Length: 229
Ligand code: SF4
Image (cartoon, rainbow, N blue to C red; front, side, top):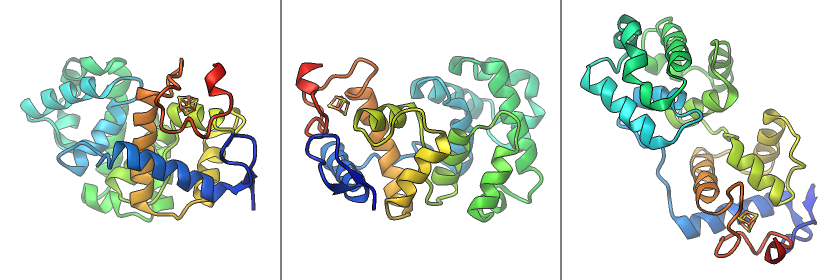
């Protein structure tokens, strides 16, 4: 069993124990995050595309525009392609994101409903999503976890930064390698992965930023030399 031995407080712990310790510390500090903030599965799917490289407030504005104009549906998006860039302007890269949304809607339309698409077996759903031009692993896995309700761990920049600082990874691992490290060493549970990802994002925003705020960070008991940084 892999052990983690190079961060204070974690010496000799199995990686499984260490990861669950991190999770429970974050959960007990920040409480349940209850992601994804959306009114429907369709909204989650659209939000997962729009949220790349922007903050959630900008996504909310774009979703509100789509709702107000009555185009927050597969057909609505496909029939209003030319208006989309303006409606989702707040999220940035709005032309690229329009193209991604359209590609995703065309894929969903191959099925009888969004439900049917999301009910594909997890690996098949991932394959379908990753086959869509412009849909990357983080977006695909967010859809699979938060809309498909499958147990898959989402890796993002906050995860990579945190796990590097905690000594769990070196930092140059691929997306799939980091995901495998977590999924091989934690119970494959949808609720756990739902909250774990959301809690890591919360920590990344509040404390484990590019310039970290170690003081008061709930994980500083695990971080070596934080007093000197
Ligand atoms: S103590 Fe510092 S480096 Fe460690 S998790 Fe917290 S903010 Fe990040």
